[in-house]
Amino acid sequence: MLFFGQVLTPLFAVFLSGKMPQIMVIDMADLQTQIDYPRGLTFEHVWAALQETDRVIKESQRETAKRQEETDRIVKEIGKRLGDFTNSFGEVVEHMISPNLLEKFKAIGFDFEEASTRHKIRNKKYDISFEIDVFLQNGDTAMLVEIKSNLTISDINKHVIRLEKMRRWADLRGDKRRFLGAVAGIAIEGDAKEYALNQGFFFIDPSGENFNITVPFDKPKEW
Image 1 (cartoon, helix red, strand yellow):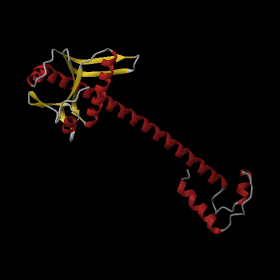
Image 2: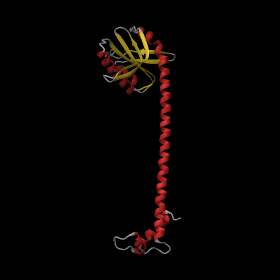
Image 3: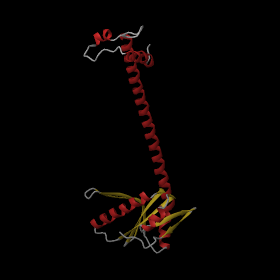
């Protein structure tokens, strides 16, 4: 079997020898008579080598495509498993924090009567859809608490949007209560705590088996 390097060397010899004919239109049947090949090399040898090279390249491309498909599958599977783990861990965090929120907020002047987790709001007519990790409420005030295993600034910005949706949904129902926001995280990214406080959110800091609530820098923002 002829390989690519074995074919190129004789071909270069032909080009360098100056024996190539002037450019003209010829068919494949006449090609072998138009080129003065080096001794021992025929048109059939060259053509067979080119066909073999093409076959090898195509086979390599197919193998590469198969490996890429397998890599993509593995990456998706890992992503799914990490997502499942993150969701499960997030639920654990919620159950750690939510039971004592009523008492904690009462200690700083907010007497909420009810607390619910995974509170869902759906309104297809007005395209409003969101979920509240922990929802605290009484007759004139409600608190939307977002709890993350790893709290980021992006999470805080999303919570702002969630409160805007809550305000819109409440207005549609004639609900005149004020809505406040709070965020919590086991791990805190960079300046996320300071950013949340500047946004007018209460910040819930886990501390050992308990947690602390930090009030906003200025005053709580109301929606």
